[in-house]
Structures are given as C-alpha cells and as structure tokens.
Length: 67
Image 1: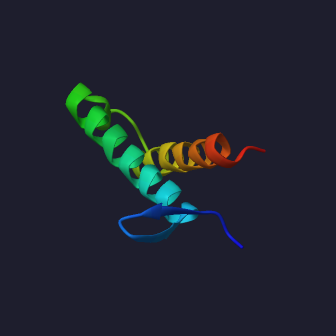
Image 2 (image 1 turned 120 degrees about the vertical axis):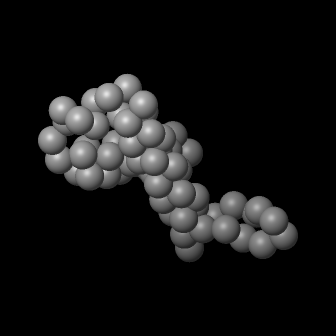
C-alpha cells in the first residue's frame, strides 16, 4: 500500500503532497527569477524551474520516507 496522510477527513496520497510541494517550489523560483532580473539573462527557464521543482519534490519524499 502506498504511503498516505490523514488530511481534511480523508486519506491523502503522499506522492500528491510531494507533487504539490514541487509545483509550489517551481512557482516560487520563477517569481524570484523575475523579481531579481535573472529571467532576462537565464536561458531555458522552464527547464530550470522544472528541475528545481523536481529536486524539491524528491527531497520532500526523501525527508518523510527516507532512502
């Protein structure tokens, strides 16, 4: 059985929570890039933001469920 959390009166899949963390991390890094002006000089911004999101989601999964 997959790991899950009891949230809002129901069981919530852990992978979905980690995916949500990854999406939020990608959005936050995009906002930081735009605010700091890096978005004008950084090539392949989509891939950079997606990579940061993937790393954040993987770290969240590893922190909760260990290697």
